[in-house]
Amino acid sequence: MGNNKMALSYFEKALEIWKKSLPSDHPNIALNYNNIAFVHHSMGDYAMALSYYEKALEIMQRALSNNPPWLAAMYSNMGVTLEELERYDEAVGYAIQAAEIARASLGPDHAETEAYENQVRQLQQSLSLL
Image (cartoon, rainbow, N blue to C red; front, top):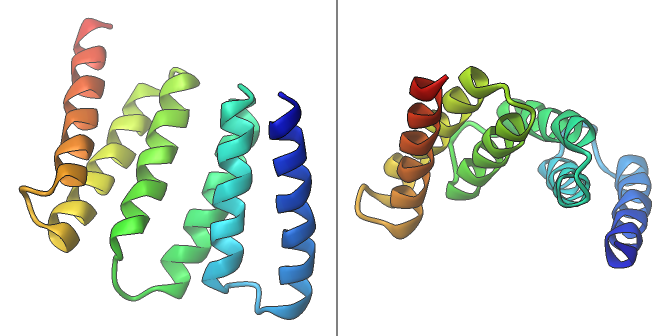
């Protein structure tokens, strides 16, 4: 837990600096939001993680005209966090977006694409059990 708090502190300080020196829609700010979200998620604070993931995705959707492979990871992270919050319908939507981006940017046989598609199947299976 101590390392998470230290990491969170560093990411928050970095965010302050970046916000002063970069435009508000710069992808590096989004990546920092994603890092902060990841730390909150690892600490079990899923609602806070979701808030930061949403900020990161909002910036990335505005800033990028293409869908780089690492954007799939952001969508996947949102899906995992929504799953933790038992918001399965929303989680499936984000997982599907992650798989589609990975398929388009990495190809259908890439290991990451397969991992995202597996995430979709698992979430759909969870939904069918509810």
